[in-house]
Image (cartoon, chains in turn yellow, orange):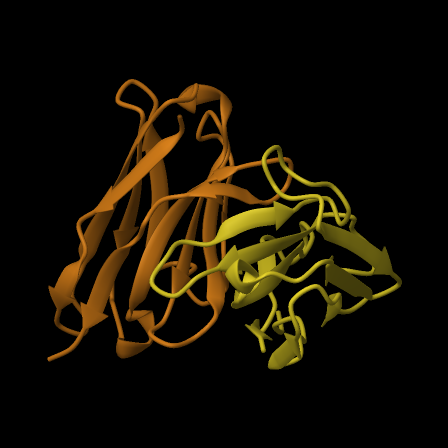
Length: 112
Length: 117
């Protein structure tokens, strides 16, 4: 199972909105709604930000939103803040024939 | 609150075995599936294994199938990962995580496994 494709880096100024893409295939992102997004600060464990493509866990800021179209999922961060600077990973269920999950390549978000 | 604490990491020679544990608290362990996910130094996340809430079903990544075994003890609220025939490619921080509606939910802080001679 190949990793999902994400841009290596995305940057934005405070207050701006940025979008991170996550491209998979018809075997994972395209067929299942089980796409999630994680935020990881240096030296820390990942934190779940979005699940089931568009849903936010309790306690996650409304500035984070998710969407999906075809084989591509996206994470949008609105009103960018300095604390949003981190690595972001998407993840998709990969199905019972290839059981398990596949992560994205990761995107470094920089607040300039 | 939910707490997951991994242990058992360390330096191990290629070909040897290691057993990781994940002690849990703050939630009803025996109603949740559990994942192991790893991250090689400076690299991205790599899903390893999933076990259902009752241990009846287990899924593995192709890269560890036949070498790693995920298990759980619901009487002790503990998750384990038995790793055999380790190679340098298995060097990583290993995280345990709760299963949350089809994805890893809450994660522990991880334990580092280094495979080196």
